[in-house]
Amino acid sequence: MQQTKKYSSYAQIDSELEILKVEKEISYQKLVLSVQKIKESFSVLNIASNVLDTVKSTFFSSSATIFRLLIPIVINWFINKKRGN
Image (cartoon, rainbow, N blue to C red; front, top):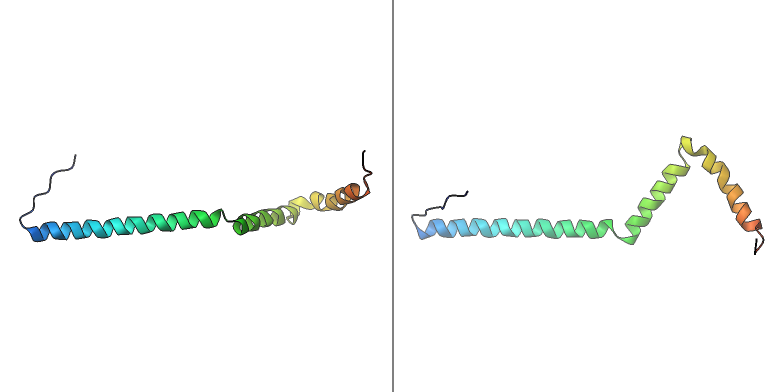
């Protein structure tokens, strides 16, 4: 439980109010910055970049050799597939 502060002058009260005002502004600016970062993280370009990075790391890693070999086969299958089959 917080104790009630006792002030001996109006200058102390004014000083405390000024400190609280600055702390409030700092908190508000932190919130604004956080919202901007969230918006940036959900931007189309950022999402596309993350997807491309994931695809690159998946298909060009040494453990994904089988996928690199299957890509041309799958592409050719789609190209040569007859309609209706």
